[in-house]
Length: 321
Image 1 (cartoon, rainbow, N blue to C red):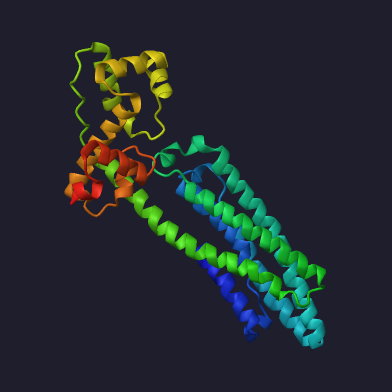
Image 2: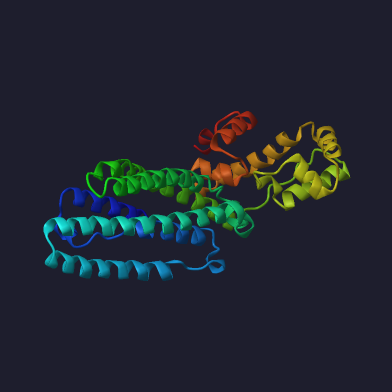
């Protein structure tokens, strides 16, 4: 997808430089962007078997449109004046781009709906990737679509003349997308890979605290540790109470009385102990602090740093060093 966006921008620059080959063909790279995004999403979320492979339709149409362009442009250029040919060229590419826009935005919206409303299909992925970066991409992409719609509309309004300047905001926006995606994918995919690796190693479970003789509290501790509930960054007092089938007030009171801590302090203590194991494990020397923080159940690196220093007196980096 990034390659196609880059090729589309390169082609626009070559057009502005009046590259001769483009007198006969203007490859509709834009036609592939949304289908490739859709394909990436369903494969990344591991739900490709549940959805149709749209590239099976789009790619043949893409190839056919290129062949048709070459044939028709060559014929028109040989049988018409330069002015007639240039007008036909611009009209054809404008109509093609309008069709591409409609198809593209439709596929993009459908992909957004999958991410937004089909979360039950990819819960395993959500356990190590919140998909915030994809949501940011969607926002930036929608801005690009707005610029694209404006540029195509102006092209028709100006009767296919002197319109090129209105495509500049779109080119700038798509260039930003290329660089942003490059950075985000390298960062996020490393983080996801590290978190998967940590999880697959199946490290030993932290020992439950033995600071109470209360049978009820011991059962709660065993449940949290045996099921590794502390690794769930969405875990709340209400959620745990529902799982244990007790009221939130009873659970909170029991934790306070038996551990002299509140719920968050207790859960963070388990998380810190788990993260300490990861930080001391030589297998994870090259893993980022962020990956370890997220895989230990914290929502962010900053939250992890604050909790870790409060619990141990040193930062995670100092502890690892």
